[in-house]
Length: 202
Image (cartoon, rainbow, N blue to C red):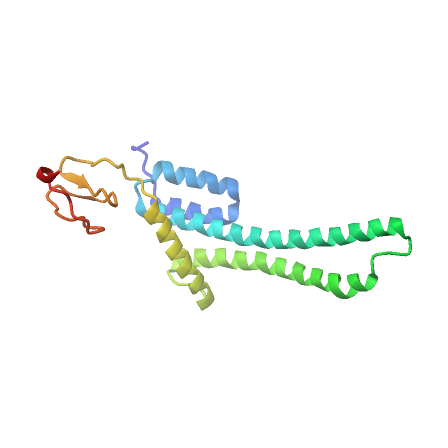
């Protein structure tokens, strides 16, 4: 596999296409990137950003779906209550004013917001592709979204590391506090500033 030359920019493009191609394609593109481009920092950064964007969109969409499902549950409960009361007293029926003046308009608003959510997610994905290619956001609101996405992606990248916990050579040592690799003669960690214990004082 090491002999196979893979263009990192092409893999990044495949990952971006995965935003629209569906989960199956996204999984294949991610697996391909991890197998062939795990040492390419640019590809790994794009992979994390795309996955973070997908996770954020999915969380936003599922959160709204939870709200609409709760509303549907309330409607069904009301209909069930009036149905039971109708068996007890045939004169009791589901009030038409409740459906015409309250539930009906609420359902129209929910349907409109659902369409807006789908449209907003599509705009965010398009803006991400545009930002990746051109280097700047389409509009200021999306710039704010990009900033938060970048911060979260950097947080994920900082927590996820592909480096081995063992030193790669005899001329390196590892900080016990943060796991950073430094030179053997270093007195302090170059990342967190922790002081290394002298071998004679251990």
